[in-house]
Image 1 (cartoon, rainbow over the protein chains, first blue to last red):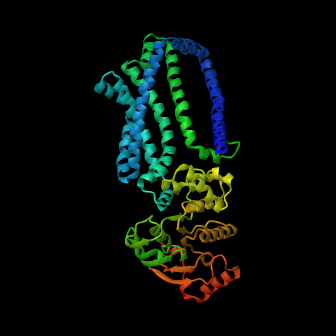
Image 2: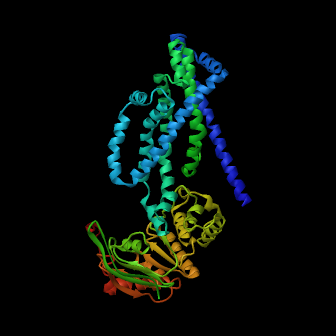
Image 3: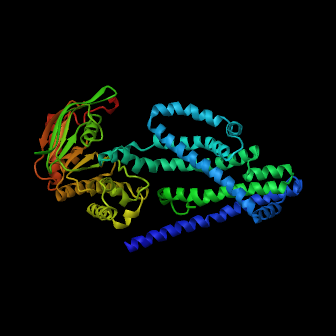
Length: 274
Length: 249
């Protein structure tokens, strides 16, 4: 048991190491992007496009003030609240719809409809319904992000392996056990990419809603920077919003996903592994 | 007393009858091979017997305590290791983690799976190894009856033979009864105590033949001669290989 236990720990450490090591390529991509940015800065001047260094300095300056941390947290909290609501509601509804062919037929056009309404329209509607409050941002985020989670979960349930279902039935599994031991794992593979998408939508919509309704948060900071024509501060707020998204995605969503997809990784030949 | 008694089984898919008035009994510790041409409803019948499909008519009376099943494809969970796959029926039975591990390893030893392979995922195993895992899974919960649904059709000849020997050996050691669906008469004669032939259109069992001798002790020549005899002189087996699969629905 101890030997098996230590080998599991070693494997896990190896995977974590690989995950961390892969951040070098991420850094390389960021620096490449900075190069393009710097070229743009040199071509158009500091007023249109401040240099990456200036923007970074502005970020550091903003980060130096405690109030700004609070601002960033407000947006993250709103985005995450909306995301959690969307993820739970979308996934649950998607699972139900996936099991019943009739409801998926009813739901598909509805999803297209909801996806077709631009988030900005939801923001306006939510502003009318809720005013410029916390709840308005959260509701907008939730509405904009739910369809992706819904589609992911429904697809997952619909594409589940009936052969495995029959196998479980042969070994005496009832509907609940079949769902909890087989369908959940299968659905997770579909829901997680959808959730990554949902999370991105959540942050973008949250910032957008804040800009439009001037209800504080990163969007509020952006709106202030715009009225002051302070481009480097605006850039800095954009950077902060992206950083918040990256922290949540790579710190939370990706590790869980790679843990679930371990078996796919195992089947990949050496040399193809990332 | 029989371990499994099917009486008057009838089933239809979307109004098309695939089985009608099928009666079949399997005794305790007895291996019955169910043969018939492709598309005659063998698979449906074994699915009904294993409680995967509810029959439209008829009754399944099972007096065994618990059963296992091996399918044509391994049907392993791709996200779980071989060990977890073998332990799946134990997990369903609510057996604790430690006990599950020990019993999965015992079942794996039984089918000569190597300990190093137990931590691999199905995708990392060869076809034969996957089917071994599937057999180990069927045996993990120590069933007293096992259903085999054309389990070795997709394997090559040498591997098929080894797997058949494995089934014969574990059936004798664990003394379980079995219903073994196949369309390969050689396989049926090697493995079974008794062969039941299904009517070409699922209209009941056309007839039965007890195979002389004990499974595992029949020589290759004996098996070959029995099969030749069945095909050449026994009218019961005439339709087994005489079916045009293009005319099947």
